Amino acid sequence: MANKEKLFTEFTAPTTQEWLDKIEVDLKGADFQKRLVWRTNEGFNVQPFYRREDLANLKTPDALPGEFPFVRGNKKDSNVWYVRQNIVVNDPKEANKKALDILNKGIDSLGFKIPGDQVSKETVEALLEGILCDIVEVNFVTCQRHSLELAEILVAYFEKKGYDKEKVVGSIEWDPMKKIVMKGKDVTPVLAFGPKLVEALKAYPNFRCIAVSSDALNNAGAYIVQELGYALAWGNEYLQQLTDAGVDVDLAAKSIKFNMGVSENYFMEIAKFRAARLLWAQIVKQYEPKNDDSCQMCVNATTSTYNQTLFDSYVNLLRSQTEAMSAALGSVHSMVVTPFDAPYEEATDFSERIARNQQLLIKEESHFDRIVDPSAGSYYIEHLTDALATEAWKIFLKVEEEGGFLAAIKAGTIQDDINATNVKRHGDAAKRKEFLLGTNQFPNFTEKSEGKKAVAACCCATASDATEEPAFKAINSTRLAADFEDLRIHTEETKVPVAFMLTIGNLAMRQARAQFSCNFLACAGYKVIDNLGFKTVEEGVDAALEAKADIVVICSSDDEYAEYAIPAFKYLNGRAMFVVAGAPACMEDLKAAGIENYIHVKCNVLETLKEYNQKLGI
Image 1 (cartoon, helix red, strand yellow):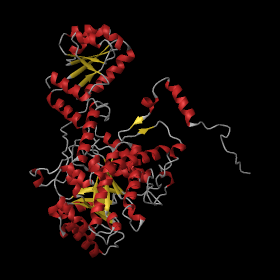
Image 2 (tube, one colour):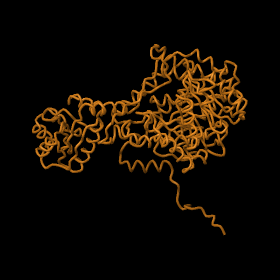
Image 3 (tube, helix red, strand yellow):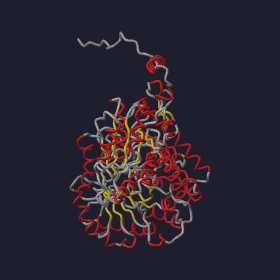
Image 4 (cartoon, one colour):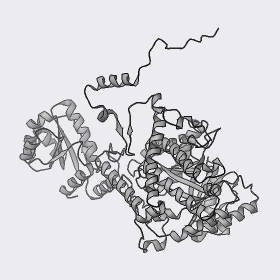
């Protein structure tokens, strides 16, 4: 006879208040809000724990996969996505050869970037030779003014091949507003091509031709909620323009594709894609489509370049892997994993293979493609989904109040917002409030650049763009690591100073501060020499001079600095720069004795290192 007794019935479930009371006791008087509540960059608080009662007023847990408002994804039976790789088309035959090769290595979605002057029937036929477009997803990017011509050539090619129109999946990524927001170029006349483009491809229901390129905002440093809010406004602008031009709302909505970035915030990125589908469905619904399927959001996700680094570049694999996992669990339509060497070179065969395999790993070995929305029901992720949707909706409404996305980017308010965020994030990186492993935190002490130089970002620039004066404000951005990389390369190419750790006194404190100081100074490429400890400051200074040190960092406890710092400084007698590791209570006394250099957790690491370079004549 089956035992139907429920386990743990003898235990009483604690209430939320009982949990809070226990936490207060364990904190021993520390402020709960400051110690355990996370204030996100997205504008809302995240609690240290969530319970079922926290979801009582949320609607997202009641949603079903494949049903309006699609918060849980567009599919009911699987979570499969297209594994995409992009190819720059310099020679159509060579690009075709590469495409056929990678199709045998796990890719089932191709992205071709064709120069505008190469758009022709001959180029398309050479490019797609041997590629079955009713099996493989095919995507195209070209000059905005040549997109309509490309669409007409593709339609003729598909008809010539006799493809089933329902089975042709792909896109032409036509997005003139990207050039306005990113470069400030006035391409508003090109917006008139939108309805014609949709009309040319209307017989192919799964081939989209209007793109929302919010991944450009992600790569410019936008916070998650900014990308989400502006992407919705961006998409709504195109939808409004198309319907105003007489395009059927169902056709218009099904023509739009969102290219979104994925950053390193694992759980929040999962929630972003869930919130994006929820909000986009609500927006489209206001246009009264005939079919709820028209409210589905189609997303191609690309892992971020903003947080990629030139030094310790294999760490980029860790970043892009978690980003790919977020996108997969967030149920995207397709995904591109950016190769780890993208910051400093054109991707190699090796880096492209690794990027492909990062997706194949989570698909074929971890089976992320088999379970629809596995994060559903998680109290934490449901809360993030709702909170992101709330904050992004505020941004969307603000843009609409300004007259819509096009009016806002003409006025420059969106560019100002993203630029301000980028400046703040670079400032936070300089202070290690936002850290990049291997760059501003725990750098590889012995790594050299070996000729690596940062690759300049490109946004489909033409020859005329170089001389044409921007009509509107632009977004100015560099990767988050760029400031530290420039400093480190400059140091390496000019003079690499030697920083010597004069460790003395309390064992635990001197070791901790020596490790901190080594990591701090190595961020600029300095050669650091750590030590086990010295009996006297004279012994330490002599050892430093013997090692030809340019910088001597005294590492001890706060209390002992009053005893050791001034004698060490006087004995060194200006033969090297003298630095105190920490911010001891006796700092004013030390400054009065002439000691002016201190490194500690509240320092602006970047500015301090620039100052030291200047003092050392680097």
